[in-house]
Amino acid sequence: MGRKWNNIKEKKASKDANTSRIYAKFGREIYIVARQGEPDPELNQALKFVVERAKTYNVPRAIIDRAIDKAKGGDEENFDELRYEGFGPNGSMVIVDTLTNNVNRTASEVRAAFGKNGGNMGVSGSVAYMFDATAVIGVSGMSADDVLELMMEHDLDVRDVLEEEDTVIVYAEPEAFHAVQTAFKSAGIDSFEVAELTMLPQNEITLDDASKEQFEKLLDVLEDLEDVRQVYHNVEL
Image 1 (cartoon, rainbow, N blue to C red):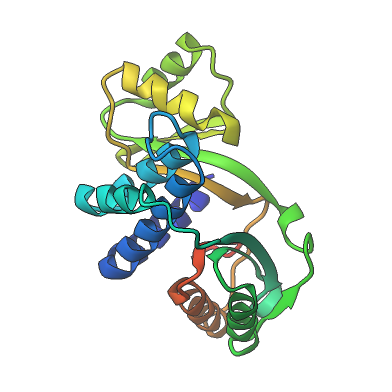
Image 2 (cartoon, rainbow, N blue to C red):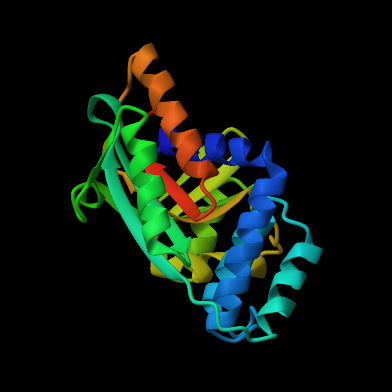
């Protein structure tokens, strides 16, 4: 799973280099999730998850609080969560999760991104079956053995625990996300290197240089779209 974690790190590094864009996207997502339920992370698990993710991308507390306060105003703008699936160069597979108030606009933009960068849209289910929904939680300051012991103490059956560079990564079922975080917090860990609900490919592929360059352009275009929340793929970068 090491390569998969490296892909997550690459994605985080890319987003960290575009702070204003990532702050704006998180602000929007927090606002929408807060408006759909209780505007309190302790009472709204979906909101708590988004806030925890935002923290791993160093989103300032002021932006988080501003988005939650805006949600308390209760305006009636509606958003839809949509997933698109498609194919990039040379057998690459891509999943695009979006949050939009204009379905036609988003579908058109995502389709154009694929079409102009060596790919094409697929039908629902054409790609997702090759990925596994996974909770990925990474911490520093603990060994893999200590983390395994902690998971057992809390009766958590996780998929894998790996020590990679200076980070210990826990791979778990999506529904265990909050339980794993709670276990870490009980051990005094309240800062996470990564805290994601992601789609991990069952198999990764390697592209030649030309295809890889085209694929990376596709990813850049997709991630720059205002309505895109997350992009997942099966390419080793």
